[in-house]
Amino acid sequence: MIRSTIASILVIFKKDLHSELRTRYALNALLMFVITTLSIILFSIGNESVSPELLAGILWVIVFFSSMSGLSRTFISEEEKGTVLTLHLLARPLTIYYGKLIFNTILLFSFNIFTVALFLIVVPGFTVANYGIFTITIILGTLGLASASTIIAAIIAKANTKGTLYPVLSFPILLPLLLTLINATKLSVDGAVLADAIGEFRIMISYMVVLTVISSFLFEYIWKE
Amino acid sequence: MNKNIQFEVNDISKTFNRRKIFSDISFSLKQKESLVITGNNGSGKSTLLKICAGVLTPTKGKTIFFIDGKPLDNSYSFRFIGFVAPYLQLYDEFTGWENLQLACKLHEINDSRQAITPLLHRLRLWERRNDVYKTYSSGMKQRLKYAFALVHEPPVLFLDEPASNLDQQGSETICEIMKEQKQEGILIVATNDEHDIGVCDRVINLNVQRSISGVP
Image (cartoon, rainbow over all chains, first blue to last red):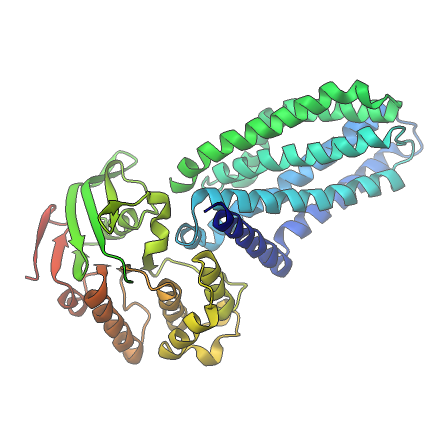
């Protein structure tokens, strides 16, 4: 039974990946957002020197809004294309949720690598002193953002004002995670040792676990209404 | 389709935004039985069909599938049903074959080629199997939905307006499929078409709620 559930989750994930590679809705939205935002920030900074702590915050602002523009597509596109009923007829709600969660996690992870690399290259003054803390923060941040974005996308997919509702609903849910991520990034920039960031990592892991477990319970109700 | 299946609907009611669509509908169907749901536009035929198929939650009441006498967990009911409706959409960006292969994988059919090929031949879609779904005509899309619904040989088949968008030959094929389903499993159809009503054994008219009878 578990093996069959995992196989179905992977089929849903591959379906979404296959679909995304053909339509490129989320990929284009994420890519355009990252490039546009980064360009605006670079123009605004100009020759000014901005503290690395502030730049750490800006990095997560870019990640937050780009994930808002791209990750909601996973459920909204099913709703817009009218394929929600098709999915209902093909798999259990939980299978669909985990398939989409894996897709969102991998999509966001790829984009975060791209965004962070671009940020490190083009933004002057942003230097990471402890890459251990920085890497763990990016990984845990991606997992937390993906788990929150997936369930929020499922909730707002049925609303009429999807575009505006998504960031509005996401912000209060993601605020504790974003504050922790900014703190951990600051520590990595300041050259703190790994032990200093353990508290932040614990919060990120707890956030991700709690949100994923709650989403697993809630998803069936959201999906069927 | 070798399992003994029974389907029960107990006191189903549905309300949308305080507007009652229908209330207290109950019926039970065994293998080799069929039911047609009729009623005016807006009477709730499609809503009742979706509730029966488990894709919509009723405001009150419940639906239960029994497999070999044992009640089935509703989250697994998708494995035992096929559903065709004009509002069902397959994936535009995938080919006909890919759409059916997706269904095969999720229904855990090992030999998907063997399951898909005869259906595509029967529904006259074999030549267009590698074309993207969005390039299909509305009639072809409707026929592919039948292949999608039948690929796992479901014991219960739900059809909403079964002949919509179909030409004469397509309608005849669908009529054969309905008769075959009636002989082997359970068939539930939502329609006002006289011909489709004639295929089924029992009628539930949502204009006159709770009336379940033989064909009038």
